[in-house]
Image 1: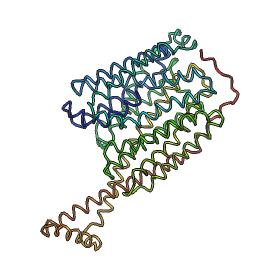
Image 2: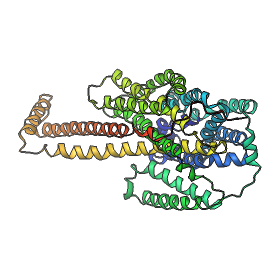
Image 3: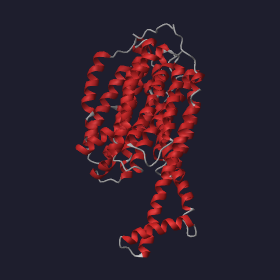
Length: 498
């Protein structure tokens, strides 16, 4: 439900704005506020869990997430809704890392792959299904129900967590240490990550550094992160143990997880946007094309979970990037004659690589890490995936806009008087308009407008081709990266979790 809420409201912006008397730009803060609060809490969730106990922290997050969902559905104004989404995003930021560390503690290394496979189905499927589920709810009911559906799930989660989940003894020992709190480090991290998330989410919309807001956020993020790093490396009890990144597996898996976020979210944006903008599909039809990849994921995650313990996980990660690269390469033939079936196959093939990325990465990141650091590693892993998604979406949308402008200027250079092919084409279109009863000046003007419309479509199509090729190159470069990591020992002793 937490991962679903990061994308389910995307299709409801028009309805929310209309219902609460807000513009569409103002309504987008419903999305931005959630992502910012989510990103702020992710990296410190492990630190908080160690302080108050992981089970207690997790149940607090579920309770707050459920109550915030109720308040979002009841919100009488946009301001109240944005405030409630901040609470919801903050609570959601503590859920994913806690869940991953609970799994890492509960299952021995040889069984973690299947545990992460089941968990990964939810994490990867939810952002894909979000727009489709949200569109169906908005079309058939009210936008408020995209928040109300969280309430029964939250209540059930609280009941099951209280009955099933227990903190292992080492967490109790950590909680009793009563270490000092680095308030400066906490404040720096909150401000820096919040500014970075706003920068990524609103950058293209505000034309990047031509906007004072974006320039300010960039400066705050850069200075804040730099000072935070220096601070964490010098204090006795840091909020985030950055020295973990010096370990080969942790540093490499964090970067790989970042790139998984880039490839997952960017392709999720590219395909439905192309189908709606160029092919004229409805939001629901485009959502169905993307959601089709969910079926492949449901089938493959258990398979990848079963294979992971039997093979070198580094080879599985490399294979995942090869499959993703091939899936993106198939999209490079994108054109105006694409069928719905072809669009579905694009998403399905790209999705085939995700289980072989998600499961081994989550296995490799805990190699050689002491149990008391599991919460921190889980929080950093979730943060890198989410930041990768934000960077991927910002990168793709910016690239599409800039390349469209470039190709439109190139095509426009040939639509001038004196260019014989252009004049012949315009003359033919003018004749067709005159046959429908239009005068010559009016027919010529309409023909020119029609040619400009064609040029816009072609420029946008060429921009999509450029974006796909850029993603192909990016994922292809990552294929050898997993081999920088250490392979886990086959007969490593099983750590005691309880």
